[in-house]
Amino acid sequence: MRSILQVFIALLLSSSVVFGNDFRYMEKISLKKDDQKKILVKYAKYERLFKFRWTLYINDGLVVFHSYDKRVSQNILSLNHKNQSFRVELKPRGYDHYNVPYLLVKFKKFDYEKNKALFELYLWDEQSQIILKNLK
Image (cartoon, rainbow, N blue to C red; front, side):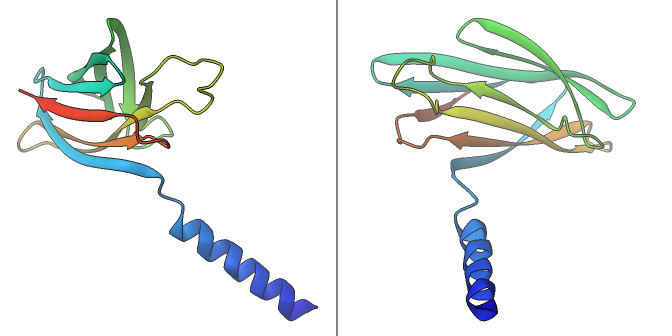
């Protein structure tokens, strides 16, 4: 019985490693102060604009402004705490959209020599409904 339990636990742990990354898209982004990253988000018949920029890095905190579909927000991201990232839901929640697609923007590091912040952008889209297009 003990060996069966050990095999079950080993299978459970290995499957979580294999299937742990459900993100469909990942991009590394390097931005200078006030440079804006713009991404066109397309799904069904809709096109929405997601954009973000950072304005201040002080005391290990990065002030980030972002907007999606005319909703503006501000976050303070830090490498030393749990608030390394922010999440933006790409579709409205409805009766058939319990797990809505979202973007996750994660602050990875700050390059003092170049005065640039490095981010990683992830797309979680279980039903493959979203198309992302980088804009200049």
